Structure formats: structure tokens, C-alpha cells
Image 1: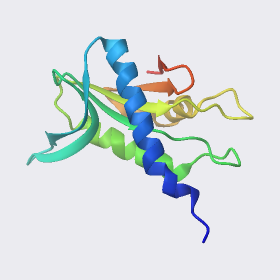
Image 2: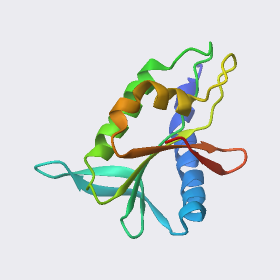
Image 3: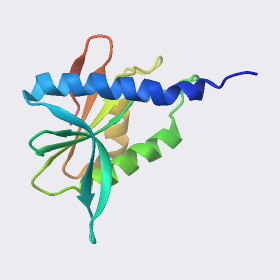
Image 4: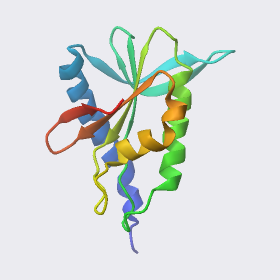
Length: 144
């Protein structure tokens, strides 16, 4: 039986989330909790965000996405990023909302997936910031 490479996605996503948690703790100087349910919308309904600072001031969604094997735009993943933005926009206005995307450079362009996303979907971001995370160096880079 051939095992799909997609079977590894949940564990890769969790490892990415944990690495981002450590990086954000250093970047902001405060601890972050994993997968915390937070009420959003009207009427309020809990949504489990990937990371929330222990003081509740910073709410984060993380996505360990890459360009496709043929270096095409991963359009389905763009839709999921838009969904993450939608949830973040419904968090309280007094919170800092952050989307962290894996640093992945396109082989033929001088553009990362996160910078492509911001260039293409900036009009949807509203008050959500976007950062990219380099898993090799552990560094965060703010895109917007």
C-alpha cells in the first residue's frame, strides 16, 4: 500500500506551529498558548486559534504552506489563507491579529509565498498583520 504524502501534513503543521510559538515568544517577549478557543462573531461562537498570547492581546493563525511542486500558485491554499483572515478579522478589535506563513521562495520569481499572498489579497487583510517564518533559521519577517 502506498502512503500519501498528505498523511504527514498534520504532524508537519503541528511542528511548524510549535516552532512559531517559540519564535513569537522571543519576538514579543511573552508566552503563547496553543490552540485556544476564543469567542468570535455575533452571536459569539468559539473558534480555536493556533496561538494566543497568554495575556490575550495577540491572536495568531499559522500555515505551513509552500508553492506547488510545479511552482504554481497553490490556489486551494490561498482560499484557506483567506478563511484564516476571515476568522482573525472577527476577533476583538483591541487585539493584534497575526497570520504566520512558512517562508517558501518561488524557484522562478523573486517572491515568497507570503509576499505573493499579501500582494494578491492585501485588500482583505484589514487589521491583520502577516509574517513569514523561516524554519531553518527560526526567524520571523513581517510582510505587512
